[in-house]
Length: 523
Image (cartoon, rainbow, N blue to C red; front, side, top):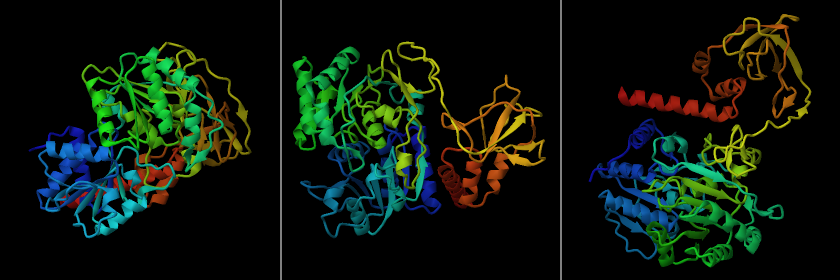
């Protein structure tokens, strides 16, 4: 059977083939929920077995394994299973493999390729043991969030990120549902401690299970989610059961599932939402990933988290389109949007580790005081209720540094930019613009800054002055092309004022490597 892939999926397959052709052994396909990573991976599997090469599809959740098995069979790809309680058929070139089972079994047949779903987990010791026992074959990682809560980088296992597109782009193409986010005031979480880098879910469950807190969440559900089918992410098993019970007491059809639920309960939760027999499934320890129920059009967060992966993957449970589905409504009662950003925020991923400071950097989100809709902080008007935001007063901070004045003499169209050369008419010295305020046509001059300077809302301070002259603007393309090392690219990124010059430099080097690989392939 021939798989029918969309253009973006076909491009992803081509990009992966080029990556392997250029010498990479472990790329990651980075694609958001709803892109069709499994279908894309199935095409890779088909190409492998057509050449007699064996493939493992490795994952940790039974829902992922079951869904993958169904999709492979639908594509006409027969396979064996290396899973507890399943009979093994090692004669098949394709195996769907549970990492927990493979790590305990000896002398398994060695594959040519291992495809690892949710591959941000792959640096765990269990995965590493399985990969080593398999003889360190080629790897293909699949994830929408190549980032870990503990900050460890994925370069320990993988060697290239292969990007695809953003969630917003798939929404624009009507392949995913539009997203609306509401963040009403919730319980006080200040007393909750941390464990393993995230909120202590035991303490969170105690706070969030209080009848008044659950009742507040229920009141917002009644107001905003009438007629929807939803999943509620909860902190503990007891919390999930309390939420389901309160929903049932209010006349809704609800059930709770968690890590201890048996297969029949898990299957009923999924089938009940798909068929419309359930209004809500309250989940603890489950469903952040691996569940494909397009009919879900409401996601409720009653579990606080510092994990960007959990936040994006959890919201992804409601992004798929379905007949009659208008949009996805996210109710965030625990401040996850303020902590981690809007679900449609575009992220700059990297294989390298991230510092605690980088991981805890506050995103750019604000909440409407009238209807509690969450949106990017640049919004001037609430898209839900029309509330108009007033500019907030700004406080000036002073940091030691040199401020140099400049007039708009000879300034090119669009104003001066970071990296431009200017001459100080007082000293005759020429400087590279290190930072400045945005160009404003009504202002005749600017403060230009090099070195540490005064800050206004965390940005370099700018103002009028008539004492410097524009000299020239560098050719960015030529400058970038002449940089031969990653260190030189990083310095260019810093001069241009990039937020993540290291990530940009790695992306440029990876693109060069990919292009050179393509040239060798076509030669």
